[in-house]
Length: 534
Image 1 (spheres, one colour):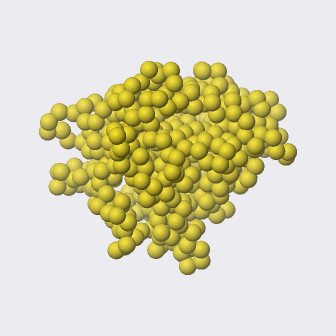
Image 2 (image 1 turned 180 degrees about the vertical axis):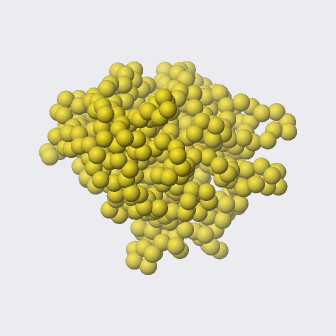
Image 3 (image 1 turned 90 degrees about the vertical axis):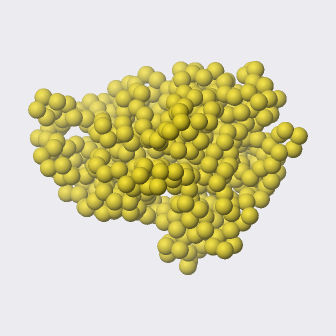
């Protein structure tokens, strides 16, 4: 049996003709985001003679914006490697964004009928606001991490080349293709990348999201990234709390140095594992000028390059041809010696520390929550949490799946960053949760596991060779962290966990209060970017 849980044979492979005779319909937009007045070019492939199309602004109260019925269907020629080169489908429908369309995530629902059954798939685009006021904050959608895990067409940055069945990754991921089923829309209660029970003696690890995907016909990566798992539940919660949310994408950060201008608070939610150099530059400048970065996410790890309509990420620095041109732009870990821009410089924490909790055989009987170490920190105001208290525990597991941390030590019962990994000197570690860098294989290959420890060590050795720093040598045990630090005139709050949003889904009062404290403070502050003229 394969060592990777996601490698179990079978499962959905989305590409035209993958299942002969099965009805097909997919859609994508030519860009990820638009302003009012711009035209969304939608490209649709279907085996049906006709289809319906609906645009819905998603959120706490989904709103149908426009419908088209009985559109003529067309089967579009699709390259075998569309995951890398794009689909190159012709335009099917053009929709102009009206001035009254509020900033938000817009789902494009396409439907056909086959033997009396409705078959539906989704695409998306984000509508951006031209003026930041009167938003409380702007939510940055994690489009780079979506591209890393999107296996529509058969492959992603993890597996699938050439036909969707193997574990060979593609270093190139195209924006010009549909999004894997489940990343945009799925039923409530779909399994997440955590196990919520506490197993007994003799337990064998299982991976609920993969099992759910195989049974229900969704991508095996449905829970790894993007809207349905992360940004949507946060947006629903925020709108229910009467926050006014604006929306942009990571790609907007990459392309537009002024994307955050005028906002005092920027928010990231869930899984933001992948960033470009330019994206980081925008975030760093925003905070330096007085902005508040509220990161309710985890696993800040890889540099990517955006090249035209594609994202590039080799991970192994020796495979990236950029290594001979500009080593700082090599698509590998931020903390690697080639790039030498530690993740903690931006986020306070790094994906190299931690990492896994409650995912397969990683800390399977941990509490699933965070333990408080600085109860007097302003982030915890109104929570009534004491030193040593735990919040967000199982079955919510807000400290779960992938978490960020730093190298640390204890003094007088409180954790302090050592700084050897680039952690800021003023980093305040507020709460912590045990984590491991990978799973031990205690079943001699008989049971698939999610993140093999040996693989993690191999990656680190690939980066550093015989010069591996002491704090990374044989690193197996770590910690996920909730932390805060200042940068220039601004502040970064980092929840350090991909599963923080699960506390909001289940209305954990502690997670909700902490989230509200951060958003209220950052939304109320004035950053110098607020006062700059366009």
